[in-house]
Amino acid sequence: MKTASKGIYTFRYDASSGKLTPLGVAAETPDPSWVAVHPSGRFLYAVNEAGKNSMVSAFAIDSGSGKLTLLNQLPALGEDPCYLSFDKTGKYVLVANYTSGNVVVFPIGGDGKLGASTANIRDEGQLGPNKERQEAPHAHWIGTRGNTVFVADLGLDRILVYKFDPTKGTLSPMPEAGSKSIRPQQPIVLGPGTGPRHVVISGKPNRNHIIFMYILGELDSSVNANLTTKEGDFGIRTRKVSMLPAGFSGRNDAAEIEIHPNGKFLYASNRGHDSIVVYSIDQDWGKLKQVADVSTGGKEPRHFAIDPTGNFLLAEDQLSDKIVTFRIDQNTGALTPTRDSVEVPSPVCIAFLPVE
Image 1: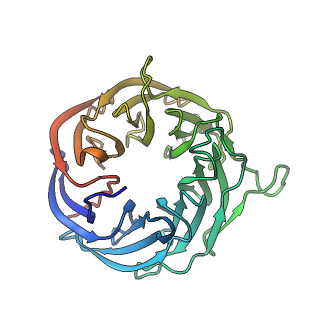
Image 2: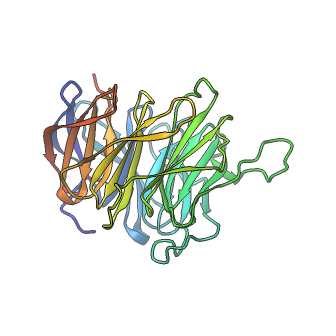
């Protein structure tokens, strides 16, 4: 989609008020659909979503000005990358290529530059029933827990699971059922037509030794809950809740999902209904209860981010070219508009970098 965006923009963020102050273009780069700050805080990585010409870019961060300096740029080895993340060591970046349905691993050098890929795997499985959106595998999210890699594939209605070798940067299928050496992890199979887009996993196990995984279904506007009693080994049973109010019949594509830093609330965004849905999380078994849905006041909130303090949520209305700020009540999870917003062309991703 052609936009007026020049690339990646920088803002000064006031954590006490939630206000954003524009600082201009940090780096001109084409179609940066996802950005992530390296755990060291020294580098930023972006995927450039441009069909067969898609790239992955590495930047050095000037912490004083927020400006970015391109370190290097490599072909994404797939079409239309839409998500990237880091392994637990911070030595590798993992990329999900949407259109080509493959995931790729690139090593990160000490200078922040990307090296030649160490893994490249195309998703496989039975396609979902949506003929327009599920005509092929479509990797839409990739994340890790320990040395387990999860991939949300919108086309397959699956969360695929791989074993990651942090010494070599390689991916391999998990052991077959019946293996005596390592407990197998089967793919998480979702309902037909769910279209998993993004996933969020809770932090430390709760008092019942349970970890929660929540899966956003883009195509059926749902949140699917899975839980486990073993690190990185999630069950295949799901509990599904709708993201839309009863009676809503318009077009909608679910977009983003995030757990509040206090672990008590979950937030998810709708494009079409143009809202943020708030759920409370049962702390024993992870069951979700809807608290509210709040209009973002614009069109297509493709992404939102909760600031590191947990006090504010910043929603990006992609087709309204603005970022809108909400105050979060950390006791109830409720969102209240601060009436602060900033204009920026086609915002689709926010990443925070703490500075002194």
